[in-house]
Length: 414
Image 1 (cartoon, rainbow, N blue to C red):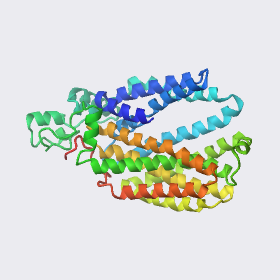
Image 2 (image 1 turned 90 degrees about the horizontal axis):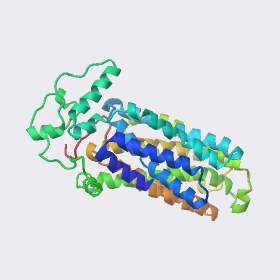
Image 3 (image 1 turned 180 degrees about the vertical axis):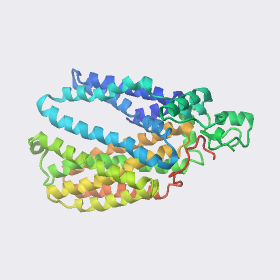
Image 4 (image 1 turned 45 degrees about the vertical axis):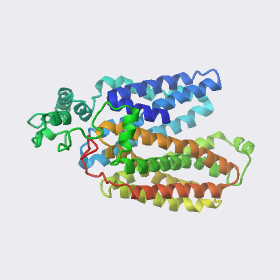
């Protein structure tokens, strides 16, 4: 997923959001289905790794959707978009609960690959981002997409000509009409603003992300993504680990317990994401992205703190449930904030690289959540989560810009 998040972001910024979606969906569905027929463990791991590369393209979808949504209610619509991740989580947990005890893991992998395969049926119906098309200078294609959207919604496009930022610069137009700025809210820029080239390669895109105007935001965002992924996947694992090892049971004793318990716990904990999403929807367009995220991180610290002690299973599950609500909210909001913060030319690359950094957190957290709890170091494990979550909240406070209600940028300089 680390490799995929980085790679598909670059592909999407260079060749378009639709092509990024097509490739990621194809890779995920084919590798997912083939993994059900893996003849040995090594090939299974290899195929699941390819699935991970495909799934790493998630930021392509969020950036693509974001570029269609108007600024005033963008936060709410992005939360609705994120809700489908939660529905997928609940669906997968329930599917595993039913399929694994009766049919086994091969059937689970085969059935799990079907939803992504169905996505490919809708490829021809999906429009390319008009903002991306304008950045590439393809204003005729952008107008065609906008006219189709207008027809579907029973509206008419504003009068005037649609002018891309490239055309504005070439013609050195200082004051284009209001209608001409439909997709170009930033027009008074220097001749070749940083990050305006939509054909940037991987290294060039990274240099833009670490340029003086974006470096602080980028580094802090990487820290937030790391903390979010570490905390989110850690809480998923702790849901079963703390309950199963509250008395430092041996691994053998744990595996002898009913497998149903793990799936049941994950299924119940997955529902914690629903109130997390509702909380995000309420807060994101009222309190703003930064205040919402930082508040949820700090509240999560409060819910995790009692877990340094061995508690009854019901209380442990309840505290983890509440903590997961908070982390779901921060995870949802950071995926709204990140693409809003970056300009169109490096948007999916920026979010993709940040997501890749998050994957590093996701890879490290099992060593903590499982390793320390198995080794009877529950207090140390929980304190480490406390520190990560607290530092993530502090990083959010120091992010330089609030994006609520702001127009998307096409270039670094505004």
